Amino acid sequence: MTETESNLYDVVVLGAGPVGENVADRTRAAGLTTAVVESELVGGECSYWACMPSKALLRPVIARADARRLPGLRQAVQGPLDTEAVLARRDWYTGDWTDDGQVDWLKSIGADLYRGQGRLTGPRTVSVGDQVLTARHAVVVATGTRAALPALPGLAEVRPWTSREATSARSAPGRLVVVGGGVVATEMATAWQALGSQVTLLVRGKGLLDRMEPFAGELVAEALAEAGADVRTGTSVASVTRTDGVVQVVTDTGERIEADEILFAVGRAPRTDDIGLETVGLEPGSWLAVDDSLRVDGTDWLYAVGDVNHRALLTHQGKYQARIAGAAIAARAAGTPLAQADPWSAHSATADHESVPQVVFTDPEAASVGLSLAEAEAAGHRVRAVDVDMSSVAGAGLYAEGYKGRARMVVDLEREILRGVTFVGPGVGELVHSATVAVVGQVPIARLWHAVPSYPTISEVWLRLLEAFRDN
Ligand SMILES: Cc1cc2nc3c(=O)[nH]c(=O)nc-3n(C[C@H](O)[C@H](O)[C@H](O)COP(=O)(O)OP(=O)(O)OC[C@H]3O[C@@H](n4cnc5c(N)ncnc54)[C@H](O)[C@@H]3O)c2cc1C
Image (cartoon, rainbow, N blue to C red):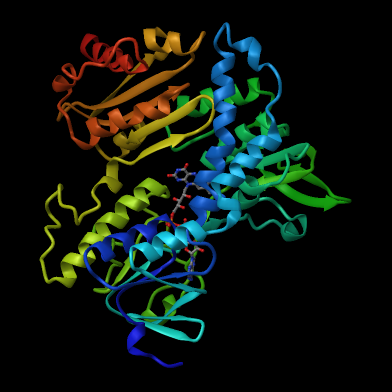
């Protein structure tokens, strides 16, 4: 291996997912030379096997469900979805799993792309094939996650689906068992049930979406069952085999289920097992703990941004971290001190702690920001939950006949601000940013009276929430 002057960069980024791309964008904008190393496709999991294809599959499902809730339109959308056309649109969104467009974009910002598995070989150095890249200021690990599979004997021979197959499948399996109760499991169960599969959802816990307010999982489970899926809670897989192409599942309660495919959506593992962490005194395969500037604890040159640091496994939150890490690297390279203590600083990822927004694109949608009631109580805040049935809102009734939905705000009684907000119902995904502004801005609840929602929109749920708080 030879190290040449051309392999010396200010910043080396490992992984060109949305997060690595955004770090590079910021460091390049600050005038720092930047190399980006990618072992698969520029654009990462999000572009090809996660956010984009899953939302492309779900959008027609949700649009049809919305249309079916409107007299005058309902009759026009009684038939099945055109699965082939839905999959073709999904393929378009993934660029048919080619990354030319995103490679061109990397070029346009002046970052150098190295294709191959990047590995740290010591402080500030990364190998890619027979090249060694050296970083003057920072190496950024943005290698993301992969699906975690349970330790079931013989699972590899079953060829189970993970999120990759679930988002890239070429046709709907006749019978699909989905194992898991989180976001990926519920979204993929919603999509494939509507695209023609008979879905059986096996959930180990008491309900779905257990990181959100309990009513989110309850409403989504109810709707999945109404759509024809078989939702079984308190059930886990004891064994799974595949014989003559057919998957045979035995549950811990002794039930036997046959299926054409089985999807495991039971969690994520960091892609840090083969990136040379041992050469810098870190544990291969571990999540990388970072401070609020995204710098790995105990180093002054290594950053871990996005999924890989386990702060919030979401693209928007990873891109937020990328903007902050990029700014922090640029400031440190210029010798400017970071104002870590300032909550408004662009060098401090404060929103990761208690103000993360998330939308689950099921039918109904579930959208939340900040802390659930249980999380707020566990964090020691003195709080009260205020709940509202969203069907009482004029805009909701207009949006869908028989609108079913619920909203909750968690009010901090000492500071009179919101710690968290959750909406569940058709069309609520676009509502969550209003709540994000209120939570992140720590807007005093009395001021929210003066944030007047337009009539007749679903946003009027804010008035109902505030009235319910005032009157009780
Ligand atoms: C099915 C599904 C749906 C999702 N939907 C949403 C959604 O709607 N909204 C949302 O916000 N989030 C969603 N997520 C989460 C989202 O996909 C992740 O939060 C996001 O992809 C994280 O971005 P990242 O850049 O950190 O990692 P990734 O997107 O995983 O990118 C990491 C990149 O690093 C590369 N890499 C890994 N190791 C190396 C190495 N050693 N050398 C070089 N390159 C390497 C990989 O090939 C990959 O390209 C979803 C996840 C799943 C599984």
